Image: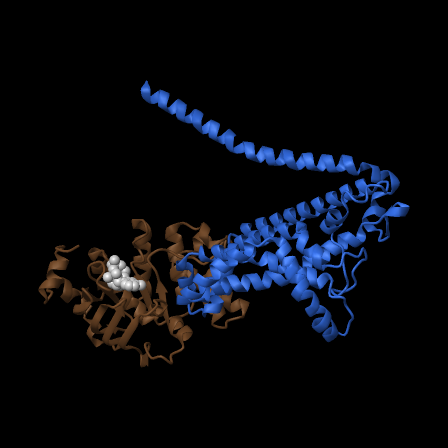
Length: 302
Length: 257
Ligand SMILES: Nc1ncnc2c1ncn2[C@@H]1O[C@H](COP(=O)(O)OP(=O)(O)OP(=O)(O)O)[C@@H](O)[C@H]1O
Ligand SMILES: [Mg+2]
């Protein structure tokens, strides 16, 4: 009798727990849907003035005459983020591999707190660092070397600053993931006569791949929306950049620079809402894409 | 197996000392291991059996600050000489460990891993090697339809046979087996035993075990280690029937299990 009662109450508790863990998931979904609805609602006036294809693919940005072509901003966002990814991914993975597989214990002991520290620095500080060091460096050294003229406030500066900001997250997560690869697996490869690098390349990184991809997703979900530091060094000119030395105007910068100031211009308000919606869609699309990659990798049984 | 005496030794260990963290783990081991026979290393836990094995393929190098002196001659090459090519040494000396450790890749790739890193690119040769090795360990019928599935999906017993096949794929001369059946069910353990018996004419097998009955079943030659010292070694029949040293006798009688 007592035992029976015990079982029921445990089953009941299990049921409650099962429901309880659902709550956060539902909450998150509700918030996401609410955001889309609010942005759609607030942005709707802009759809009346121009068709959506024009909004997305036109490059003419003349708010005063009611022309809102978002293409410069979309391409600015994509340029800066892709450049930052291109810089961050190889460097972060190599750093994480070095720290986890090669570095002496003492090096590790110094590097780890430094990386954590880097992750905690506010983005304005990175922005200032960009203005003080990266922008002049590009203007005076790198651009002349490439044979072009640049103010230094450009896609490259934005990408570099962003990359520096994303490093710590990607490195520290990748590091943990690599450390979690069982020693036996490394020994298996070494005992088969693999060199250390072959072991890292074919076994450790393979095993750690899903985790590293997750680290990159996390890093760049932040990067897409990172506003302050990028805004400070990227130039903020609404043109479609033709090279990394051209200025750009990413979407977060557009919103941050103009919200609350340009409200006298009709439809500007809803144009900015539409910008937010685009950013939102880009981030969601990136995440979905990354998930698909993850599932693919996972299926391979790594 | 009186043939033991007549075979040329494949491995000669001379005055092998190993110091780990200031403790002398192996205290001057000298022993000869016959070619193409199964040599069992027995002895109580912590006596240095695994350490001895790890000197033979130099996995001991992974232990920071390990001091290893002496000679481990395989054929006429000293495995301990600093100039030796470790990748080639480990190709010649395969190792299978206590717990199955498949690599994070498919069954096929696990077996092809060794040949590939040692430069084999021809896919026909690799196909042939994979099927030959899987057949040798009796795994072919069980897995030939899912060669490209992740190796981690195999049962533990199958994984261990896969690890054996993986070592065989490099065409080694020596196989180091460190308690390779201890994580397996009795049936899988028997499988492994009979496979070792089937291939022993082509490989010099060194087999660490805690199970004396297992040593009796498969060993031609026995080495008894105790607290880092070699107490006795010789043909299995002799050691098991008339051990010379009282410590061997006590161990065989189960005084210190
Ligand atoms: N990495 C290491 N650092 C320091 N000491 C170690 C290390 N590895 C092993 N030892 C010590 O060396 C001794 C021998 O270890 P070894 O693993 O060779 O024993 P074993 O005979 O294989 O034991 P078992 O039968 O339990 O596997 C033990 O006392 C152990 O504590
Ligand atoms: Mg051991």
